[in-house]
Figure (cartoon, rainbow, N blue to C red):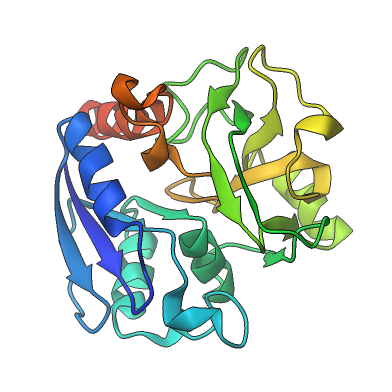
Length: 231
């Protein structure tokens, strides 16, 4: 597997993502937002940051970048796409995922460790994860409160499209573990086919033991194993 790490004006987590992918053996390249091509075998990563300064709404301008049409085609063809933090916001603004990321319930920017508990067990990003534990993935956002109408949330739950909820190390989903007030503690969701993941916490910040934790690598390894199983 190779990865295409997208870079918009204001993206700052592309280097972290390249480094994290390297830890699990995934070769990656940076793709400037004005480019228009993505290879069929590439994992597309939309990293965190403040694309276009987060003017209007987070991700609202980035959705119109030329590369996003290639991302749409890639997703429709079954290619793997993951949006992290600002990348999640961009995927929602581009209607590749439902719902929206709103201002944190606290009205504060939150930068802290958090645990996410896998809910879905069948997507390429989650099939290799343990549903009985939490994975430490730091959050760093001011607009991370996942919000959708009741019908959309019910649809996500009924169709097993909630990828992660905020929880504890031992796998309990609790209100106290929710850092931003996301509805039903949602930390990440999937598209209908399960090949597009939007995730608010940062797995690339938990990628090596030297920094104290490498839980985030489990998501990359799960995707890597899923692609290997297809071949």
